[in-house]
Image (cartoon, rainbow, N blue to C red; front, side):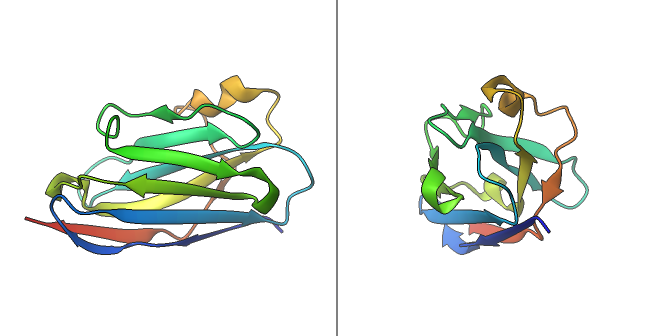
Length: 128
């Protein structure tokens, strides 16, 4: 059974930092697509960043570029989202998602496709 376990959410002041992590388990050996999406009540879910977990280059939403860094530890099946220079508009529930054993890295940049698995979400709240 595939599971995504997220951690690291919480509260921060504007300009501060938070680090989210997401570990995938229950998958067979191989690279996956893993990404972070966020949703604020009353708004549509939006992609934040995604990566092919084996030597992939992350893709970022415009809102995350220059402030967030997504990295992957392939051996630990874990991705990390370092969020710096946080803004109140970053406040949302952050969800980790995965596509298991994709045919290639290009799949990971397709935020419109259906992602296979989702975590429970971790709340990020940024105050001004």
